Image 1 (cartoon, one colour):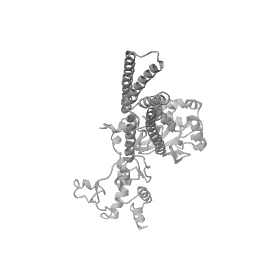
Image 2 (spheres, rainbow, N blue to C red; image 1 turned 60 degrees about the horizontal axis):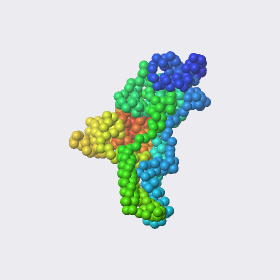
Image 3 (tube, rainbow, N blue to C red; image 1 turned 60 degrees about the vertical axis):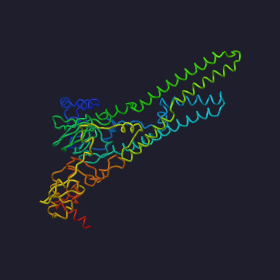
Image 4 (cartoon, rainbow, N blue to C red; image 1 turned 90 degrees about the horizontal axis):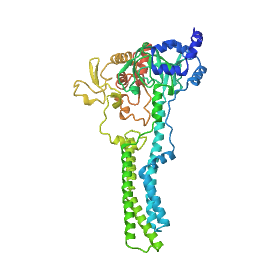
Length: 506
């Protein structure tokens, strides 16, 4: 039976399983097209996989990866320090200052031979160097931190079936033809088609922006990578991976897109152009007026040196007007203020990739959104309740005491019997399918202070329905029972509170 699941591919199905065909299936999401190639079972069979057993060995997995590609999403190339420095210098205000400084230095050294002239030019260049250095260093360092954090957050384990056995697999190792185990709270690593499942509901908010849940069945089996399974459990066949997925195409388009100038950058460029035009206009007018006054005074035109010196003097005055008109301190002041803003935002656990982002977010006065999970942590907490006719108030929820005067915030385990604790633990376990991992949220992930809030499962990874996770966190924090231990004890027929009692005794 096992052999028949892994062999016997027809030539028609083999020809149909080209990479482009699978991509079109995942993109168009037409059930009729899926049925033409034998459905999910036919695709798995053609790929050398099985809807029940998955790939038989590592050699089949490697072959699939070579044929259909890996599950890596496109990444924006990290810029080195020199590229950030060039970007910082490619500013209209700084360009005007550099040109004016060079002219001033050349004039002071070779024409006027006065120290104050070329010293002024060096001072302007020094201001340009400080501005460009601060901007490029901050952007370079935070760009590296952002890339490292993104790589850490993106790397996670998912569960697949290979050789008939469920096993954990790094998300990058998932290949076309893998059997992906669907669990509530799981973010799909790639485009899939449902094989079997119970009560599957998916949120595609990260792809389409719509918060409504979509029910997935055999009549509508296609699931988009990057979406989240809100409810249910089951198995799905991986159709496309990496850049061939819908989410991968979106990421690639965003990576290739150049960032538009921020409002402050646009205003500074307009100001620099205006100052440049006005300064050059007044400088040209001054030069023409001084030359005209000189010639109107009836000079001796045979004295070439005098004429040249007077004309050069008028030109120097005109250049000086242009240089003075350009505010060399403005870019430095803007850069320093943005650098301080960046430090303040990092202290609030907000990682800023570019200094310009501080200006954009600092200008925001209101955020309008219809997506609840965008503005909240998408986490819930047990506030108050009643166990065995004993009302209680969760620890840290004293602000709700007026809403529940009869509730007591003291230690709940000391006020209810072990039998009641056992019954509560079993009730929570039997009615939840979510999981709470003991892995802490990575440092600097921007999770906020609530990630360390005990009443919201601080330091735990939430996987599943937020309400169910809140119940598991309550079981852990208030009743002192670990969900995994309770599940094990229930399966062995032991009291749910036994592990907690044993741990306390030890």
